Image (cartoon, rainbow, N blue to C red):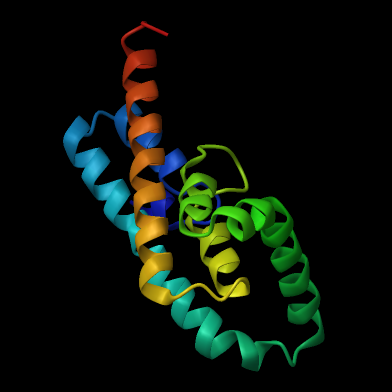
Length: 144
């Protein structure tokens, strides 16, 4: 679960880690998915209330602007053009740099309504988790 909350892997790392360590395959999916979904409310509170205070610190502002630019350029075209569906697509890609952290930042930058952003992130996480879960199970059985 900790890998699934971490910005260094999210469920993309949590699921394979849990399966490789012999945890029940269904428990791994549910726990990693749920932990990854928890990231959005945490990020929302951070971006809405804490981020503005920390922007006063030079080193934080420099890092935050860098991360925001990466999230905007990585997701910008998809979210601008397709909105809700673009955010789902961006979050569901099981590749580095996409996921709920970047999706939360992008939805904040593009000022998406919170409930729609949460739903889009959750759907994207679910699809990504299924892809990673199935791919890991197939790989462990030697089918891929």
